[in-house]
Length: 263
Ligand code: SF4
Ligand code: F3S
Image (cartoon, rainbow, N blue to C red):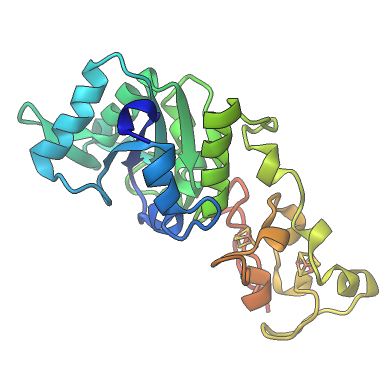
C-alpha cells in the first residue's frame, strides 16, 4: 500500500521518557512493522524518523500548512512553566517551538488525538511532586475529545488496537474518562489469577510468594485495564506475575498510587 492511500500519523513526544514509543516497537498483533508498512504514513516521530533538525521540522510544518488530515498521538506531559519554555521540541523560523505550542497547533488540526501513556493522559511521572516543570496532561491544554490510553508505558496492543479501530471503524466506544472499553473495562482484581487467595484470606508476606499481594499494596483492586489476560512482552508475563501491580494504568499514577510496596 502506498503512503498516499494511508492515513497520516504524527507522534509527538513531550515531557517523558520515550517509554511509550519503545513499548510500541514491541507490538505483535498487529506488529509495529505492519503498522509502518500497511496502516499509516508516519510523518513525524523524533525518535524513529530519519530526518533531523530543520528537515524534521519541515515535515511537520508542511503537514500543518496542508489540508491533509492526520491522526495525532502524543506521549509525555505538557510543561506549562514559563509559558512552555522548559520543553522545547525543535525550532522553526529561528524560534524555539515549545511542546505547549506544538500540542496546541497539532491538536487543533488533527482528526483524532490519542494521549498515549500516563504522562500524556494526566501528567503521570512527569507531573509527580514536586513537578518542577509544571507538567500537565494533554487535556488541560486542548479543548477537544482526546482518546486516553493510560499506562506506564502504554501496552502496544492498546495503541495499535485503538489505531486499527480508528482506521477500520472510526472511534472505539469509550468510557466516561475517554478510555477505550476494548481495553479498560475491567478491574485487574476481578480477573486476577490470585483472586481465590484474596477471598480465602491468604496473603503474600514478601514479594515473590505466590499468594494475593493485597497486603503488600497491590493496586489491582483500583486499576481498570486488561493486564491479567493480555499480559506483556509478547503476552508472556505481567507485573503481578513478576512482583506486584503499582497501578500504572490508573488515573493519578504515580502520586495517588504510592507507596508502591507496603511492609
Ligand atoms: Fe487483587 Fe492484587 Fe490480590 Fe490479584 S494480587 S487478587 S489484583 S489484590
Ligand atoms: Fe501497570 Fe498494574 Fe498493569 S502496574 S502494567 S496496571 S498490572
